[in-house]
Image (cartoon, rainbow, N blue to C red; front, side, top):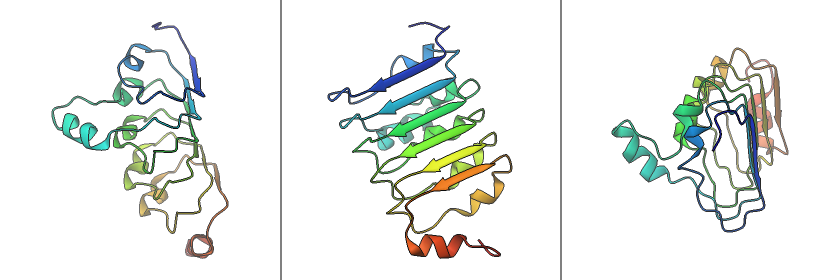
Length: 159
């Protein structure tokens, strides 16, 4: 591993099940793309359990101040974003292309530097969390295709 690596892209590794154990040493990492990894999953139960002991299974805390861009694409087993991502306070761009994503978590508000957010496909999303209002740096939001119910809830003046 290299502490000078700024960009890491992991694509089409069909048997990759985890990316924990190593990313925490990439202290200069600014851009991370995880794409087309059908077996990758974030072990939420383990992550929550370990977080109670102030240790995380994914190195999100270590990447919190350096990671500016994150792409999560076509990760078939991922249905929710890992809680540890809330530590990515320097994140400016988040591209989520997860076909089974069910919700955007309330902790999204912790991503205070987020300027661009793309969620596609959004066929399972029926609402956005109230925390979206706290994303004051957000300049670009793309959600598509979205269900009619989400579209109606997000229309001005109330959405």
